[in-house]
Image 1 (tube, one colour):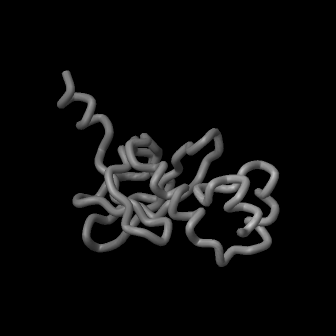
Image 2 (cartoon, helix red, strand yellow):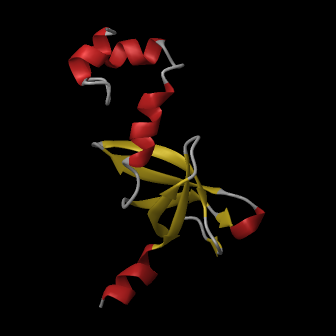
Length: 107
C-alpha cells in the first residue's frame, strides 16, 4: 500500500507527507478534497464575475490557508464582494452567490 494511503487513509496527506504531494502533482484526488472543503465557505472576490459571460476569482480560507478558485455566478458580481461557495464544478472552479443577500434571507 502507498505510504500516504497507510498514514492518511487515502483522504488527504498529513503534514508528514505534504512535501510528497508537492512533488507529485498528478495526485489529483487530494485537490478534490480541498475543493470540496470550499462549499459553505464565505470568500471575497478578487476578480469580478461576469455572470454567464465568464468567471471571476474568489479567495477562500480553507484549513487556515487562503486558496483561490475560479468563481462562476448567475449574475455579474463586483470585485470585493463577499460571496458564499455553493457548488464545485471541478478543476478548482466553484459557483458562488452573494453573501449579503444570503444573510438578509436568514433574518
